[in-house]
Length: 276
Length: 299
Image (cartoon, rainbow over all chains, first blue to last red):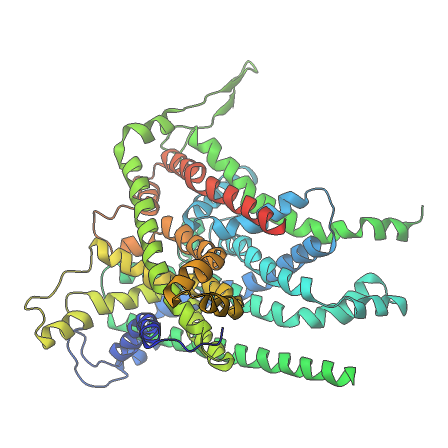
């Protein structure tokens, strides 16, 4: 499509983007409000950010969430990539339909159902096997299960479009299939691995519902702490925390997007050079 | 038969098995547990339900199935009402998202390639930032002393602050605000691929632009409409955070009922029965639909 958009369309687009961004910008604005009364502007202040550093409950929860996020996204990228390789490279195997179903189902499953069923599993396992105790371990397992689905979908599409001729050439030159894959195709799908790692990390960092179900006493993730505070109403230190998280994540996504675009452009350039 | 040959042939199972076993144990089997517990009775112990299988001292196996939990779902009307209410809320918020998202996607598709990538980034960016925090940010706008009411009061359009928080419109607003990017992206993907010469042909044959839109653009964008609607409808229907934080006591969506049953009443068997019924009534048809539409696309 190339025809110019009409002023009406442009204004709807602007309204839509405003709906997406105004609440976030207002929140960031309020986080610098000196007044504890959220409705009154009491002048510019970084008071709430300073207070955040002394809030042990929030710091502990943030640390726990970060640890969970790193373990989860690493685990999910490994499992999800294996599943994607299986689904793209092995057209026929027993249990293929089962695997396809299980990597797609978490995408359409309401979190609350996944959370309840997983809690019931963990409780029964603990009862019979004496493992796992509800907390860090159970949250990690539950998050890996749904993040794997997102990783598989991302890596799968990248793997389908990846050129296999290099891998075949490597095998002709005497590499084993695993070695050939690691040397040629893995670098080609690396951007997809990186973006699905980031996606898993943010999904894990943001999850409230599943964590609330499978977590145990003493293991409160950041969203759980935020939720319990927010339920009571607007609070200024949460404004500061939220602004911090949103800006941090936004900067990371922009940086990752920039880096990925640059490497993609470099790859295209290299390919063009090679063709000459 | 040498050992290397065996590994080469069996090697693929080293790749298939880890994700398969993990998802089997930690995603699929839990549904079996939920089904089992939905047939149990509540009990005051840890875990808070009875065993449905028991072996008596004389080695008789007793299977005690309790269908009462499912019967209870039909007798207590809160469950039926919250199912219907969830469907209604998800349906109408999907429609509003479509009405807003379609022109947005259309406008983006009509800009130049470089503007497109910037606009898409702007649309995607909120999706990466925390969902919970965005819902919370919305509260800052619509609460009684929030920005919206202050602005309207200042403009003199209203004389008393509007009560938006804890009402149905707040829930709709929350869902639309949270899931709008999911609607715009698939719509853009189909609209971008649209062949412009078809529209030119329609114009040459005398169609006014609105007619060409209805005859050409709209039918060709149906896959995007369906994909976007699914991406909004599915998470909206099981939504818990939005009705809890923004809605009032009337906005009883099924996700909230489940949560209260579990954490408030601690009635795990009934909660399991609600989850199983929810799964069968809502997720089942959606999954089947997706399965068949995927097959149709392949054909």
